[in-house]
Length: 287
Image (cartoon, rainbow, N blue to C red; front, side, top):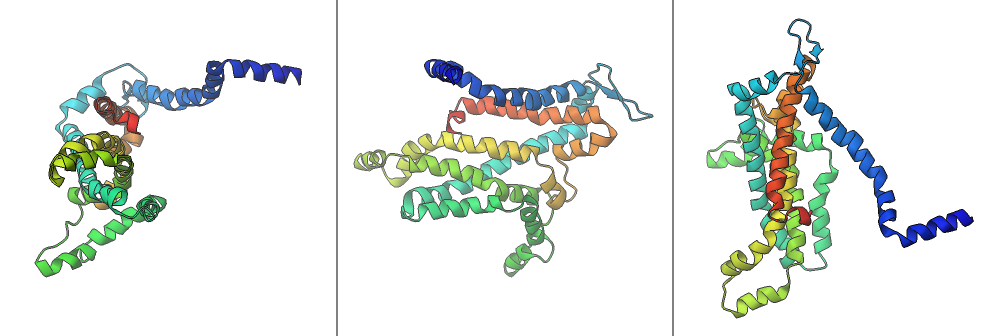
């Protein structure tokens, strides 16, 4: 009992030691499992595969990365994957802002928690259920065709547009919530001051609201961009013949593990660069 009391007293007098002890276990878990697996992934990308037996040969070589950046198919898939992630992020930002503005500034305060719950509700549903629901909507003779038929149009079918549309639906809540929080915390006196100075609604939106919300938009884009870049299931279900980098990683796991590792390092590097870019906007402090 005396030892316990002395230990508690020592920890109480040394908050930094107490914090270090609390963080040791999760940091070790992160370092060993997450960072360790990334290190193994990066190292295995420099190995090769025996063309006859398909066994991994642990000999240091840069052939995988040379093939990755010199083969036109790989370059096209990488650029397409980054383009899809950027398109999904842009669509999420455009769709999320009016929704978040309504839930944070226009709706009655008593209804705002219910609206936030409604936004979060799709996240509770199964990923595959949502994707297959969109497959039914976009299929030939589906809901999209039925709605557009009176206008002489048809749905996008399966392909790259369907992939972007489905991913936008999947990750939209991750963009709405940060923007909603930023708009909810926006001081009313700033809007009143802008109106008192003669600014119209559009000028207030451009000069007051958007600059204060942009860090939250960037924070939401971290989720939408990274989740879209690493996704490979949606494109298999609604993408038709479209290939993204996740599909190539999955396809090479059994046949050529080092090449799969080299392909997997590309989204990791792209996401790290994206995080460094977003850090300049203050997005990471809004997460």
